[in-house]
Every structure is written in structure tokens, then in C-alpha cells.
Image 1 (cartoon, rainbow, N blue to C red):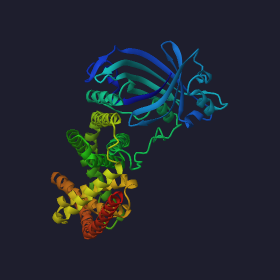
Image 2 (cartoon, one colour):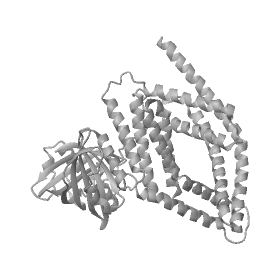
Image 3 (cartoon, one colour):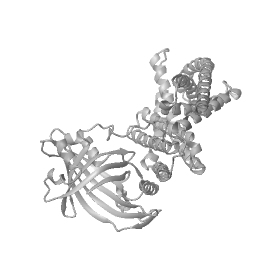
Image 4 (cartoon, rainbow, N blue to C red):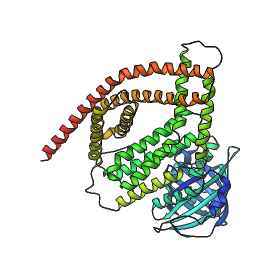
Length: 529
């Protein structure tokens, strides 16, 4: 058998729900579902002594299925945000001994032999799990194999639990798999699983880079400029969404590191910025729906991020040692307590996979729109480069128009400038290949953004202390707060003094780019005529 396997993997955040999930009949959009089939699957994975298959991104597995030994080779493909696509070839063996020769009649045979050379196959690790399988037919006619696997990985003398859902597309639309996944995530605590069992076993055995499964994943942003704008931007939004899901996984795993939260919030802002950028090409009701849901998702971690920023500022004050005090610092304890309380609230949502349904529903919508566009004639669609240049021009003009109402002493006015500038900066970075002469513009926008960001952080720290000091009477805490806020007052004064100059430099670069862009367009129009 040879096919391109497409499946969505979801990890069960509460493994005890596995059998309940396997037997659920409450799946909106599913027209027909078969009875549950239960199988015990034991698999052995093989490679050559020098790990040639792993280096070639291939996997060889022998598994007992329905009383027969079946050898499977998986090759190439990609793993993005839990949606796995790869070549798969399976043949029946006469016994459980692995064989290369049985694949010679398949399309993978010659490649497999070339990769292995004269080296033999040896067992490297195993999996053992109970599989609960059902076949689904959804409303659009797509056929999906719905699987729950519960068991363990055995590798390197260690064990790791398997508790996951797999939704494998047998026929029809990939967006249907994502839609079913979204509906499942509304009912049960799950999160996307970007790692295959094979890669998890490699990690457990200490044979793989723990950061990444597939080094061949297509870079998120590679443009030529002539692509149809709408389809390409939908693909970009999908790539940015996958970045959000990966960042959430990192935050969940390494929550004690403030940088993982920072990167998650950046990933969310980049996705929301790209969504705003693409707005003219999107259905208005869908745009508003997902923009608001993503905005709410960002708010969930806002307070925790404010605490981390305040803690970083306090550590900077302590590092400078520009003062002498007696006794211990109480602010350390307050920051630790507040972060723990805020993290407890965030972790409750993470443990339930609260955002998974949102992410998968958005992904399903984007995938469905791409599928729709692939079926229609796009010859007259606007080229990506033309759309990008037009949107950047509009956003730049909007920022410059803010000057007449801009009040550099008003925090709300500066915050509005910061938000719009940040969105533009993300787009300039993503589409740098399609925009001529933007390096100076981006550099000056970054400088302006750094200043605005520092001012915003200082304002948020002051608001935190206002809350904390009202509920605590410790004189030492008031002392610590005074030390930090005094240091920040000096920082604020310096930032505000530089801000006007940073704005004028950015304004000059923006007007220069707009003028060149207008001249280039006029020249192009005249040349075409």
C-alpha cells in the first residue's frame, strides 16, 4: 500500500478520559460513525547501526495487525502544529522479522535500499498500546478514521505514556479533520501534539533533538510576489497560527521561564496583526469573530506578563547596587507570590486545553478557504506584492495621520501609537522580501517602538504597585516599591526626552518611503501605458 497520510494528533491532557472519548457519539457535523473496534498493538521500530534511516527522515516499523505481521515505512512529509503529512508504505510479512526485500515492489523500495546500503536492521525501540478505532463520515462526505491510543513507549530503558487521539483523513477534505478536531476539543481536554510516536521515542532514547521533529518544515515566510494574494495570505495566517500553538506548548512545558510567555504573546500579536493586514480579503463576520477570540486569548496572560516585566525591572535595580538598605527585600516575595497565583489561573486553562478548540476552528476555516480558492480560477486575483505594498502604504499613512491628535504626555495616546506601530513592524519584517528600501524605515520604527514599550511597561508597573500596596501594609514593601519606582521615574524621563526625536526620525523615513513608492507606481503606470 502506498499513500500520503494526513492526520491530526491531539494529546489527551486527562488520559483517564481516553475510553470516554473513544465511545463518544456527540460530534457535531458527523453524519455516520461505526462501532468501536478495540485492538492491542505492539510495534517494533528498526534502524541501521549508524542510524541511516533517521538521517534520511525515514522510519521502519513492524506491527502485529489483525493476526498478521505488517511492515510499514514512513518517509518525508511534514509535521506542522499537530497536522502530520508523510508518505506511508505497508506490506505483509511472513513473520515478525524485518525485511527490506518485501518493499522492492513498492515505490519506496529502491530508495530504502539506497539509504540502508549494506547495513542490517536492528531494533531501536518499541510501542505498546490499546487502539480504539472508529470510522466517521462527516457532513461534506469526508471519511475520517477516529483513533484513541492508550499505552506506552519503551525506549532507552525508559517508559513514556501514550494517550492521544489521531484523526486520519481517508477520503475528502483536510479541513474536515480540523473541524472534527475543533468539535472534539470543545468536549474534552486536549491539545495539539506536533510529535509522532516515533519522534517521541527518539527523544526518550536520547537520539533526537528535543526542539524539533522535522527540519524540513517549510519556512513560514517565503514569497515571490506574483502569488495570488488571498491564497498566499491565508497560508501565512496558517503558518502564524501554528507558531502560536507551538509557543503555547513551550509555555506549558517551561512555564517557569518568563521568555516562553513573552514568545507566546508575540506569536499571538503577530497572528492578530497579520489578520488585520488581510482583513480586506476576509469575510467580515469571520474576521471579527476570530479577531475578538484571539484578543481575549491574549488577555488571559496579560497580568502574568506584567508581573514578569516588573520582576525583570526589579532585578535590574538590584544588579546595579546603587543603594544600601538594611534587612531583606520584601518585593521578591510579593513578586513570587503574585506570579504563582497568576500562573495557577493560567495553568488551569492550559490543563483543560481551553484554547485548542479556537485554534483548530480557525485553522479549519483557513484550510477551507484555501481549498475553495484552489478550485476556482484565480488568474485575475491581485498579486501578493501589489496587495502588500498597498496595505503597508495605507498603514503608514494612518500612523502619520495620528500626529495631529498625538499627545506625548497622554499614556492612552502613546499606547494607541505603539499598537499600530507594532502591527506595522511585524508586517514589514514578514514581507521584507517584497518591500524595497524598508530597512531604514524598519530600524527607526523599532527604535520608536522600544521607547514606547519601555514607557508602557513603567506605567503598568505603577498600576501594579497601586493594587499591591493597597492590600499590604509592610513598610519594607513600600520601601522596595519606592526604590523601583524611583529608578523607573529616571528611566521614564530619559525615554520621554528621546521619544520626540525618535518620532521625527520615523516620520521622515515613512514620508520618504511613501514618496518613493508613489513615484515607483507612477513610473510603472506610465511605462505600462
